[in-house]
Each structure stands twice: as structure tokens, then as C-alpha cells.
Length: 328
Image 1 (cartoon, rainbow, N blue to C red):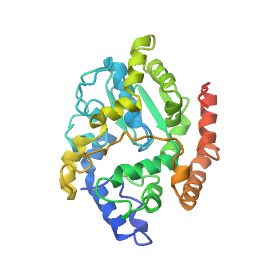
Image 2: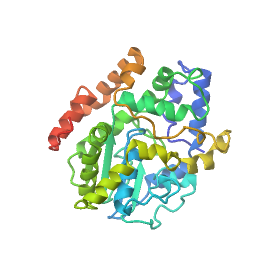
Image 3: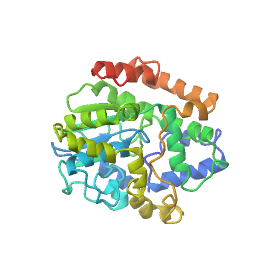
Image 4: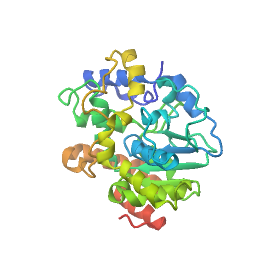
């Protein structure tokens, strides 16, 4: 049993995390298998495949819904989005054992959180989505915490300091890159012809425009206004919230919860799920100044060093200008 979150955390575990935080980490560490992760890393794509590759909590599920809607004409018959657009490094652990299998709709599509250096190459197209790191960190906190713990047991400050910010550059094949290193690794490829670089905030600001961009990039429905309108509707917050059980990763939870000592249905009951309000810049008023400062410092150490941009907002504006877009 292994973990794609393992390397890096052990070096600091005795410095400051609380016992509850360490217990939380052990649950995460055991949740994924090395075997499953490596199957994703070593996957050999076909030259027609599409990979949606994002850091965690940056709009992955949102873009999966858009891409699947475009290729399927708005089909919603799937049980959960991860069964029609499987996650490369997690699919094996929730029973999707053959990544090479034909999918119900073409082209084949996959999601992944792998940074550039580990992401399988030779796919036809890659969609990269980024998000303000402090917002992604807060979303990650709520998504993982509610599986078992309460805000009184693990605060957002502790989670971000001892989990989110400790995810860095992978030191082994079974470690997942943190968001900052993910951005830095894909940045040199932002203008590649087979890469579509998007921002979560672009989707929030102009969902219809982003659906059009994705349709044009995939060359699916790029001239079909009715299809784009349908896909935009089905990618709205209201629609996805209404169908949240299709976006809650319940196949993975049912398969792995009991392995780590949780009830089989943990994280699937009530309002738990991946479709939240997604408010832009909510972290600026909800996180402490100390943690926001630590996030800014990590940005400067990793992303500014690689891109020259002092802030995420500057990067978003700069890249959209490079790409001739007017979201900002």
C-alpha cells in the first residue's frame, strides 16, 4: 500500500502537525494504492485521446462535464463522471481496471492531477485548468475534511500549512505534485498547439465563452450553437448541484473507505460533494492573513521563479493576453 501524497510530509511530521492532522494524513496515505497510481503514470495514450490535467480542486469535474457533454450530445445517463472520464491515477482503485478500454463516446477522455513530467505523453490534446491557489486550498480543505473530521478538529490553517503547502515537487513516481509545481511544470507548454490553458475564474466569468473555446479546441460541436447552449446549461452550478451524486466520486469512496477504517458511505451523504459554490476569492476573507502570506510566499518561491509573475492574478491576465482572450 502506498500513497501519491507520501513523499515530503514525513520529513516535517514531527515539527508541528497535531495528532489529529497526522491521523488525517494516514487516512489519505492509505486511500490510494501505488499499483493504481503507477498504472496511470505508465498509461500509453492513443494519439486521439484527450487528457484533462489540473491540480486538485481547480475545476476538473467542471471541465469533465463540459467535455463529456460536447462529445456525447449532452448525455447524462452515466452513474458518476469518473466512470465515463476516468482518472488515470485513481481509476484502478475504484474498479476501472482497463484504461485502454474503449469508452462509450469518442474521443476517449481522461482526467489527471499529474504534473507535466509524470503525465503520459502522446495524447492528442491536453486541457490544463488552474485556479487561485488560496481558493483551491480552501476548497481542498472542505472536500477532504468532511469525510471524517470537523473544523474544530482540523482548522483550515492547519490543513493548508501541513498538507496543501507541503505538497511540492515529486521525489518519486507515486507522489503527487502540489499545485504550485503543477503550474510551473505546465507553464512552458501553455502555447503548445495541443494544449488548452484555462483558468477556473475564466469559467466563472464567461462559462459560455469557455464552452466555445473547448469545443473549438476539441473540434467537437464548434459550429453547433444548440449543443454549446445545452452543454453550458448542463455545466451550470444549478444543474450540477441538482445532479451532485453524479459528481461526488462515490465509486472511489465505496471502493476505498472501508480500507482506511471509514464507513462505506462516508463522504457521500447529504450535501457532501465536489459541487460547491465555487466563489472566486472567498479565501481572501475566510483564511487568516498568516496563511495567505504563506501561500503568497510559496507562489513566489515556485511559480514566480518559473514564470516571472508575482501573483496568480498577474499570471491569469498575462496568459490570457498572450492567448488573445478578454476574460479579464
